[in-house]
Image 1 (cartoon, rainbow, N blue to C red):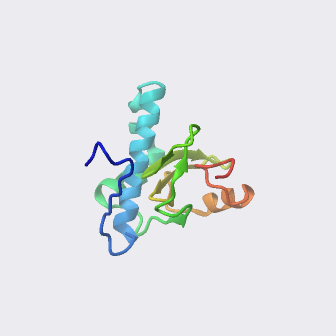
Image 2 (cartoon, rainbow, N blue to C red; image 1 turned 120 degrees about the vertical axis):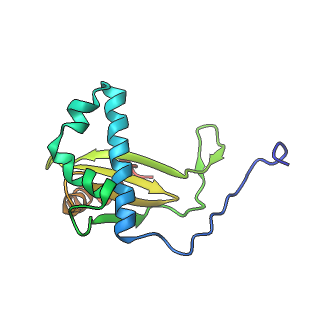
Length: 151
């Protein structure tokens, strides 16, 4: 059956979208992992750019132990339907389960932006505020950092 079918669907029964503190901690952990991967890909020095940065102490404590801020605000919005099919250059279609990027704003803030099944989430690595991300969206006509030229 697998070799004969061209298209597959996988359904994960989730009664509702996760939210709240636990999901914020999950996003914070993914943000730190994405930052670590970026550093490793660039120069491999996690001590200078990740571990020794006191600016990241708050999010590290929040992600690992739930310490610090009572709530770590994050942004969320739907970018595309979860069953949206993207079209490749050769005309074939494909699904995107998740995609992410790191966004540096003009205000020197670092945001982790991830889309999971079409829902975009953004979290600030520098503190539990999201205002800078909302400002960035306003100044960029609401375009996602994942699709700066539009979809």
